[in-house]
Length: 158
Image (cartoon, rainbow, N blue to C red; front, side):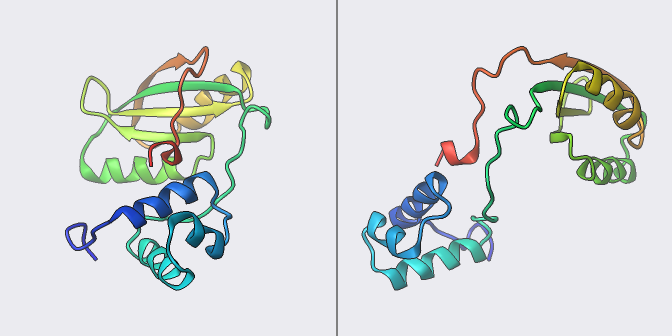
């Protein structure tokens, strides 16, 4: 199903909104909340999943309570930006759990990474052993976050 083929209506939007608040809600309670019976609600939910609108269900963890309160944003410049090099870098980044986000950037550098570690010492070790060892990394610049003023999860925007 392509994006052009998939259309959402107010019931689909309501399903997403409720699930963003409570991903563990029962079908019966979800149906009540959106104003449909159980069968059409279940069919709509399956359609949203099959269309890839809902990618999955998971627990949201508090990184601070897990001792991961050091956040750094890392500009990465690559020595090679041909397609094979980009693919190698992307594949390697996907295997590193400390990298929460990785974005290819159109600008003075190639990628912006959001990295979460325990503290500055752990970050320094991570930078030296993992980021600089990623394929084709030529140099990096680090910006340490002092405070998260706003962090949006997709659940907050539906």
